Amino acid sequence: MDKHKIVEPVSIVITVYNRSELLRETIDSALRQTYPNIEVVIIDDGSTDDTAKICASYGDRIRYIYKENGGHASALKRGVAEMLGTWFKWLDSDDILEENAVEELVKCANEKNARIVYSDYSGIDIHGSNIGVVTSENYTSYLNFASKLWNNAFNSIINPNCILVHKNVFEEVEPFDTSIRATSDMDFFLHACIIHGIMFHKCSKLLVRYRIHNRQLSYTNAIENAKEVIRLRDIVRQKYVKLHGQEAWNELMKEFRKHNQGLVWRPHAAKLVALLPRGVGILVFRLYRYLLGRRNILYRYA
Image (cartoon, rainbow, N blue to C red; front, side):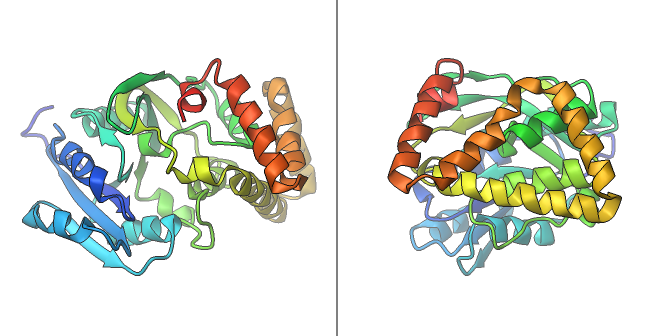
């Protein structure tokens, strides 16, 4: 990148809660970025471990903000409020950015005139060893992307740690609903895409090392998360109908079915699992993970 060119500032916002054993590696990866105009903001969501001590060791190289524990969404919301950059880079406290991550994402956003971009990523285990590569689909149209996002009921089709968001998106889309504990990414994605019609554009590079372990909320609260996504989908539907009318919603769903016939069963499956007793639901979900794991490293190694 031409270092004499004025570049828009990027805020890398790291949310953390009692993850001090992995935090330093995450912060170091943010500080190593080749992009010349970044700030690293740590939002400590009430940690009781050594998080504050670790952050203090970086001095003024980072901005450390402590808040009372309120959940992941509340930490992200605080991060958006505190950021000084033009772009928001989401990063969880156990994941790692490649050195060129921000540079490549900003370049992609500028080339595609996009407000939200995302990348592919590699999976690593708790020790940092490589597990495999996850390459997401390169969606060629808004309807193709939106229909896939809408029908994927168990987990998001985009890894939130891989996204870069322009700050003006948050002027339209409520940053994060603090009543949501573990599916804040899906809530934000559904509102941005379905309600506001924002297309997510892909940068076809491996820019994040995503850590896969059994302490992740997406793993430990899988059934509760599926119930939450069902609730979020209903909220989005109601908002869309209020804005555009029932007829417009019916037409949108018709278009979604045309673009992704093979996925329409997933929301119904999620509803079924949510109705089962928790123990039975967990067994069904594990079976689903096992079968999907034949093709997806995230499920095979969780």
